Amino acid sequence: MPAERNRLVKALILVVGIRIGLSLMPFPRFQTLLAKFRASIGMSRVSVSTPPTDQLAWAVRTVSTYVPKVTCLTQALAAQVLLEQHGYQTVVRIGVTNASEKGNAFQAHAWLESNGKMVIGQSDVAYVPLTALR
Image 1 (tube, rainbow, N blue to C red):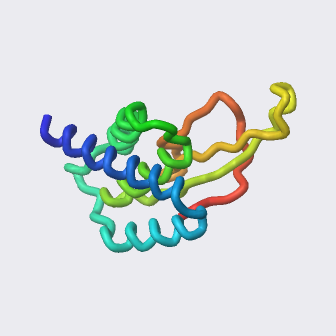
Image 2: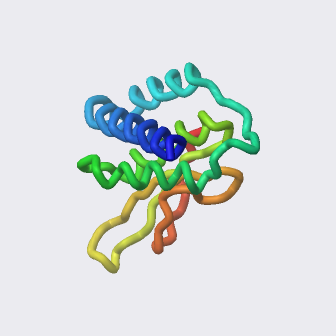
C-alpha cells in the first residue's frame, strides 16, 4: 500500500534523524531544535482520512527495529512528530521506577500519550511520570 509505505519512510527518516540528534548534542539543545522543526512542519487537522494513532505508532516501532541503539525516548519523540503532523495532540512523558529488586537504583522510561491514551512505549513496569514534553 502506498500510504503505508509513505508512513514507514517518514517514520524511518524521523527515527534516524532523532537518533543522530540525540547522540550528537545535549538534550536541551536537541529539544530546542526539534521544537523548531515541529513548528516548521505544522499540524494538519484530524480528518476521516487521517490514519489512527496505532497505525502511526506501528510505523515508528517497525522501523525502529532496523536502526541501531534506538531508545524509548527516540521512539516517543519520533512518534510525537509523526502524530502531530497528522493533527493529533501529544505529550511525551518521562518517568522513573525504583528497580531495587533488579539491583539498580532506578530505571527511566519515555512514552507518548495522545488524548490520555498511551500510544507508544507500553511497559509492564509502572513508571512514575517526572516530566512532560509538549
